[in-house]
Length: 304
Picture (cartoon, rainbow, N blue to C red):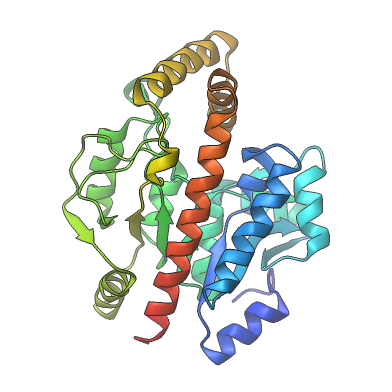
């Protein structure tokens, strides 16, 4: 590993002892939720992972280093400072060279986890092919990174603001297994079902761990996507969510919102339309993912 990647003492010790580790992105802290909910959620995720017997490792960029495992001081900085960069694969070199503080997206976190040897990563939803991509070519770097990083990613599906069928097609082309956790239907972040059927299913953490081991034992590089539906009691009304997304997309187009700014713009609009219900749902689903992700990490550690 490069000396630009800084492992916390806890992560370093866990790696040396073969203890299961779960990576967490930091974009949800800096760009996904308002303060103080972002800090409360981050700490709750850390507690959930610890209670399952694993070591949590939030990933972020600061002071010229890509951190795998962060301090409470850095957590507060990510949650409160203005101008925190949103760091994907493209942005890592400039963020490191400038010494800026940055929150890693799915692709940025995957890079850090893969290079550190962390095999499980928990997030809310992954990026993918944006609606209208046939005109804009707006496709998330997450898909490219998923094709090459050896990490199991537990999420509540593809973000509902995206073109779900096209995203699944690209994942198939990239050879990324998309495994429904106790479901045959692709979850759509705020809703448990999208109407798109998956070709693989796992009903337990042990089954997921076995798929991980089989893939990487065959030297087939790339991630495994574990799609874990939002808890039923927090599921949103699909019609309301889709209508608010369509409205937000039209507003974003009118205002010229593009690139990495479009996702937080749309999520903020959805939260406004739903009266904050979407924020509660976002927190519930990522907590559920942390629990499942830790169970998968523990199961995988017993196989290796």
